Image 1 (cartoon, one colour):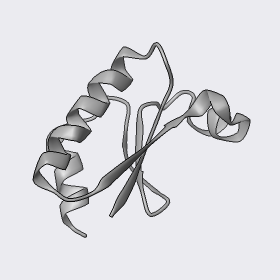
Image 2: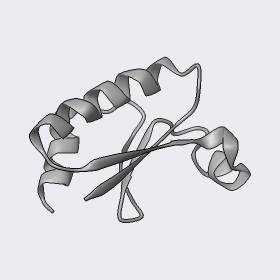
Image 3: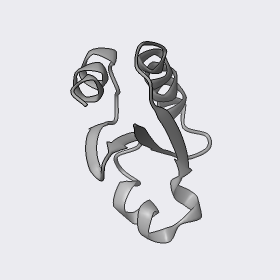
Image 4: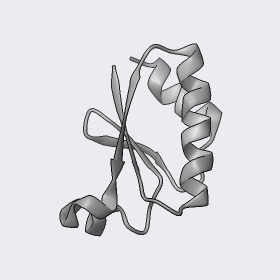
Length: 78
């Protein structure tokens, strides 16, 4: 399973969100693609007010303040 993590530099909420996602990764087998929204104008426009964003199979699982339980529920259902 592959999960996309959209963030940008100098974003404390993104640092915390990635830390939470990596805690979930310790329990479940998946890879994380970290995508800097500032490197793509279309992605930046889409997610600039939502970051961090976790996406699986093109669907947003959670954004903003990420929590372990919600991420685990959505990623465990695969």
